[in-house]
Structure formats: C-alpha cells, structure tokens
Amino acid sequence: MLTRARVATSIMFVVHGSVTGTFAARLPWISDHVGVAAGGLGVALLMPGVGALIAMPLSGRLVHRYDLRTLTRILMLFWCAALVLPSLPTSLPLLCAVLVLYGATAGLADVAMNAHAVVIEEGYGRSVMSGFHGWWSVGGLAGSSAAALAAKFGVDGRVHFAVTAVVLCLIALVSAVWLLPHRPEPGSEEPPAFALPSRAVLAIGVVGLCAVFAEAAGLDWSAVYVRNVLGGAASTAALTVAIFSVSMAATRFAGDAVVRRLGAARTVRISAACALAGAVTVVLGDRVLLAIVGFGLIGVGIAVVVPLVFAAAGRLDGQPGRNIAGVAGIAYGSGLIAPGVLGGIAHVSSLTISFILVAVLLAAMAVAAGALRAKNT
Image 1: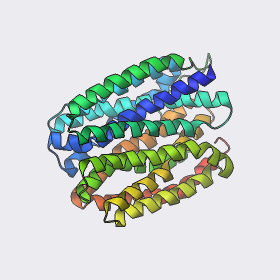
Image 2: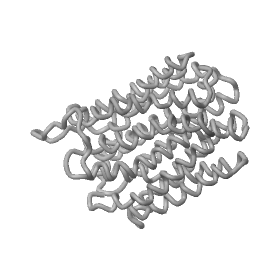
Image 3: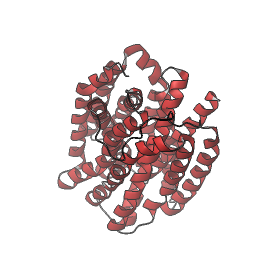
C-alpha cells in the first residue's frame, strides 16, 4: 500500500509540474495574444502571487479538517482545470483577474500534495522528499517539451491548454485512488484560518523564498529572456525551459543521497554557489548557448532546496499541515510574485538587470542555510 501511495504521490507531482511547465513555456504566446510587453506581462505575473497569498493561509486548516486523499484529489483537479484560464483573455485586466484564481489553485494544490508527501516520508522513515520534487521537475519537462512542439508547429495556445488540462485531469483522477487516507489524530486542535508563522517556520521559509524566487525566475522568464534579449527562436526559447527542468529533475533524483551524506545546511550552501554561478553566467553572457548553460546551473543549484524546506517544515513540532502552509506561504507565494517583480525591473531597466536580483537572493540563501541545521530537519 505504501509503495502504491508513493507512486500515486509522484504522479501528483508530475501533474502539478506539467501545468506549471506548460504555462511557463507558452508565456511568449500569452504575451503576444494579449498584446503586452515585458512590463505588462510582469504586472500580470504578480497576480498569481496575490491569489496564492490569499488562499494559502487557509490550506493548513483544510489539511486538518478533511481527508488528505480526498482534498489532494479535488485540489489537483481544480489546478489542472485552471490551466485553461490564462489562454482566454485578450486584455491585460482580464489576464490579471484569471491569474489570481490560477495562483490560488496552484498554492492550495501544492500544500496538499506536499502534506501527503510528508506522510509518505514518515512511513518510509527516510528521506524521499527530494525524489517527489524530482518528479515535479519531470512534469515541468513534459509540459514545457510539449509546449515547445506546440510553439514550433504554431498550435493555438487555447487549444493546447484545453487539451493538456483534460489529459492531466484524467491522470490525476485515476492516480488519486492510490493515495493514502489520512486525518489528524482525534482531539487535535484545529489551526486558525489565518496565523502568523512561528520563528522556526519563518527561518526555514526565508531559505525557501530565495530558492523559489530563482526557480520562478528560471521557469517564467528564461523563455522570454532567450527570445527577447538574445534573439533566439521561439522553439529555442521554449527548449530553454525544458533544459532548466531537466537539470532540476536529474539533481533532485540524486538529492536524497546527497543530503544524507552532506547534511541539509552544507548541501544548501553548495547548491547556492552553483546557482549563483549560473545567474552570473546569464547576466554576463551575450549568447543563447551561455544563457542556456546559465539557466541549467541555476536549476541544478536550487533543485534540492525546496524539498529540504518542505521536509523541514513537516517535521517541526506542532501541526505539519500548518507548518507546511506557513513555509509555502512565504516561499511559494514569493516565487509566484517573483516573475512580476522581475518584469517590473525589466520595464524600468532591462531583463538582464533583473537577474542581478536573482543572484543577490542566491547569495542570501547560502547565508540563511543554517536554519536547516535544526534538529527538526
């Protein structure tokens, strides 16, 4: 039963990543369809963060109140269906509106599947979280690779998103049967609907903030960067997202063994150095190939950080659902805001300058890595 549940949870991560990869790789199409430049697209990409920040504080209470298998199934179906929304608007205000809902469903589904992953990890009694996030990256690769083909053959984004959403909904619905039913112990206190994170959650969340910001920058802006800054073809731009996802997936599948050998804090510091080298390569490079290498290094560097952050939050004293939601609210919410922040900087200066901020946060991630040395991790 535990093995089947692990497979099903892995599939959930694949599905979630596929939605994200599909959306990110077709951002150039969305930009053209709506008729906005980098600045307008940056404003729109702030909206998923708004939606996530509104919805995610409720996720800890949902995890506490409802059976985790049922909750994960429902939220994943909503997330898959939300993929259709960004392809519909033809104006910036409407795009902003639908992206609020898109971000809310993303965050809620993310917390539910990570809470279920913590249950699986507890059942195994050893680290398996990095592998789950590796499957998320596989999903990102699948979604972005399919998007690259769709862009190459000129498939309309509305058709592409609708077909993808239906397929992913069916996969999530079927695989959810193998998830483990799980409820909090009887008599445990229900967390408040809204609560400020504890000091321990905040410290872990800062590490996640830096990593997820860089991850969102790579996913949502790498294709735009290659096409608009370096003049690469649309298919090459979409392929950059795929390579970013490949580098993350490969590193995450090896991540659990690395963490057991080096420890969480040391792993994060080494990872930050690798990602920082990638960001510097993106900023200083003037060729498409250099940018692709740089984004690949960023992917390698941040790959295992997010799994470590969620695992650490799930093991803190107290209620795992609330702690995961708190960390996710800081890290994942900021990551959804990141593309908009980068777009705003690009509007007043350039997208190249935007990635200097990514480099600064990666350096800060190395400094904050000590938070993962706590006994709870």
